[in-house]
Length: 237
Image 1 (cartoon, rainbow, N blue to C red):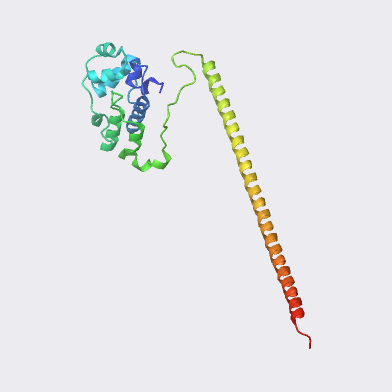
Image 2: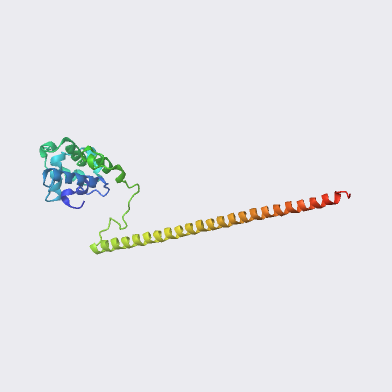
């Protein structure tokens, strides 16, 4: 989330190794906005934004500062004024306990303590919308095709997006054609097997007919030869 009001503390403090937790922080800001009807942290600058966050979360512990993974964290936080943290229950007096619990877990200053997307989907506050079968999790790392450490122009990013879309479509078309090709091969193979099976059965039937015919003719010839032999052996009167 790029908009300042929804930025996680680790982004505001200059961390370059942040995780999916930044998105969960933004989710918490949106939940807070839904509960109160106004932005939760409407900061006017980066320092003011951090000041507003700490006004709710309280001063982070050394462990929390370490989890941010930014060399500037301690120095920046030292320059912020001391505050008395406000409880979420005071800020949202009409919110239910389960709503406040989800809000608190999404707004953990320490990204390592923050609730994950998978955990949030199973939270009681969103139980009526939860559908495990329709919430697949990505099991592989997604890599950005443009180096994120270099600042490019808007046109460069736009062109790269278009290039990626075209490449993806070409790959999909290639796979579709390949699948059709394999399907045709499979159907031809099945039809060949069927025709060979029919031919084989016809040959078997023909063989049976020939066998029956030859056995009949054989039995007839045996019968004739037997009659001849009996005629020869019969004594004259």
